Length: 629
Ligand SMILES: [Zn+2]
Ligand SMILES: [Zn+2]
Image (cartoon, rainbow, N blue to C red):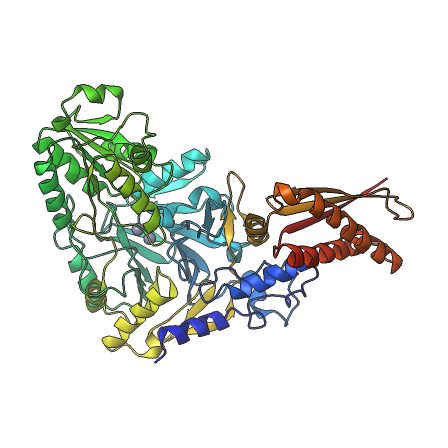
């Protein structure tokens, strides 16, 4: 049995160039900037997300099998390959191929790490599906969270708008995303009821009710000619959920009895022991806090946690408080949920925050706001800083954080909590009271799922490597053998033979990071990110040469422009030295008989790289520019 560390290493190994990841050997670094970036990338460690730039070299027959696979002919049989969500929590997208027909499950986004400067988010790399768009029979959506539907407006056009299916709320949220890009009229969205069976090509598809942290979440069963597949979606087994029935245990058990070939299952909380806390316990805690509050109550939570919002609204009504909503995503989701009947309240109870709010006695006010993750621009942070236009926190207010900081956000959340304390509010967090619970099942939830469905093969999904490994461990604990547990990474292909045995293919699709940056379209983003990182740490310097176009000789001294690199007091000295070093490097190259602009630039960049390394211990972005006169 492998330890997590060993597993990580072997997962890392499979991505190394020369083992099927790249279609051409990596280029030798040519200039110092590039050399440093290669070096950095190696240092990123096992959780490295970048697999290098996609090489656009055309495939040569017999040399690059994985590229052939991407464009190869229709293949019979059953294959499963993830394009996202198998190395991270985010950008979920799994493809199931049945005799060449493609069924996609989810099309989500991933929020970037802190070191991915300025990037809005990442989306699945769907280049493996290029040229096969006509074979995509459907995209099936498990639920309305952004890591499952968030890429729809960016990728649906490239996929040629295949049929999309999901439960009512999921499809409504997908439609909202498409509205933003004006794509709704082109999309084919179909709402499906739980338990309804729809035939799509050779496959009968069925949505099963599960509980999660957004209403209308579903697991999906695909009845294929090769056997039944179950994709759990994000789920937990809440035995006492609020405002909705529990998961469809009976149907899961029935499927298990009939025989399930493979289960693709949520791994997010596989490493957490026991059973996940029920939503009803959270409701009770919030009830008590509202009952005991003397002044206003301000609650921050996730805007998609609509069942919790319903609880808060019910409690507010019970204690004769009006509900005021703050924050764009909260307003959008509350409105959507009210229109579709997922949030029920008497007319006039729920309102938008407004100056009129202050006319009510404090004991009749309850505010629901976004910003539970400490996001700088969201409601709660601005309330804490005193920059919110309508909500000024004061002594006597009770602020409830009905959420947990996501990994990496702890510091930002603590800052907000401290600010609220300083302003005189009483702050309650999940650290002391049961104010939040996860939407993802713990170990016991997963055990229950596997006991019910009893699939022949287990494919852990939705998680970073350590989460999926913990999930594999659970499967081993209940008797699954190594040839029944399949640890795929994005792009790897699991193939089934007619006897129902599964094996990882030697072929693999190339899966890169595809970023969405501002209003820019999906594109390969590694170079952009590397540049931003270099500039954020070392600043930037541009050196502009003027040279005769014939002789290449310099006209006067180069101009030097720097940003974020040199302090005022050093300005003159360093600029002078940079001009000398740059000129010398240029003239040395000329003396060697170089005539190519690239050679001049390389020579200058190298010299300045060495200069700044020695002089300032800095590695700025160096941009030589040659203007011919
Ligand atoms: Zn989810
Ligand atoms: Zn998810």
